[in-house]
Length: 306
Ligand SMILES: *Cc1c(COP(=O)(O)O)cnc(C)c1O
Image: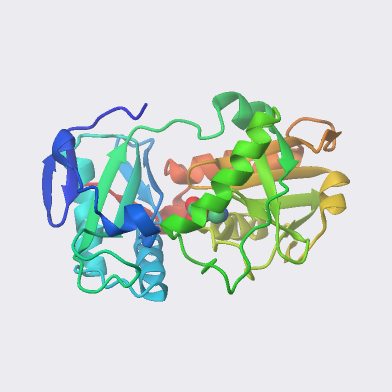
């Protein structure tokens, strides 16, 4: 259960958590056309809180909306300020932040016509998305029988509400089979991403992640590529097959929610030593140091809440 905060920002103002309701004829509820973001705010070592790469997340929200022809009735700057305002009002040192843009009620049918575009921002406390144990010891994953979206079926660069039905199918399938998360292949059979995370593999010290063809352009993915290159690793954005994951020395998922979660097993095959490898550990430690403001060099990615 999500732990309630005091307020939710809705269409321009803060209202009480319990009052943030929608009508059952909300267009997005029926047809799935809406866009959202997932952002995290961390408590930093100096006592302040900082949102990680907030401008990039707000920009991606607007990119998703543009691709889906949703006109957000606020500017990027207004949404940025609204997120800060919500965090302050809720007095949260650490939070997961969920802005969502959806089509309200009015007309029904597939043409959204002039239904109002609604915007809400919710912040709540959310620990390790794939479990504390998963962060430390790594998780067991399975390749799903559900294929990730074709680029002409869904707008894969967007965080569109309806896209996640495909993710939920994969997640349900592998969780029922006893695994922790799914790897999804693209329509040509190459490794794509997980249900809400990007994937990386490491072999002989070289790091690989699928290119941004049909994967969501993760901000964590982008950050880790920068961090890895700054540490001197070679990072390639290249397609690879599932057997390349089986024989990798290391593998991990990354995303705002999942942060950097090591993978210890894929399709019942142990990855490397069956525990987080040295490159994974190094990047995970650095990532958590960066988001908590411990590394001056990457303060450019932090927007302090003040
Ligand atoms: C959000 C998401 C990611 C990760 O993106 P971040 O910007 O790192 O949070 C990866 N894949 C999918 C499908 C996602 O929805």
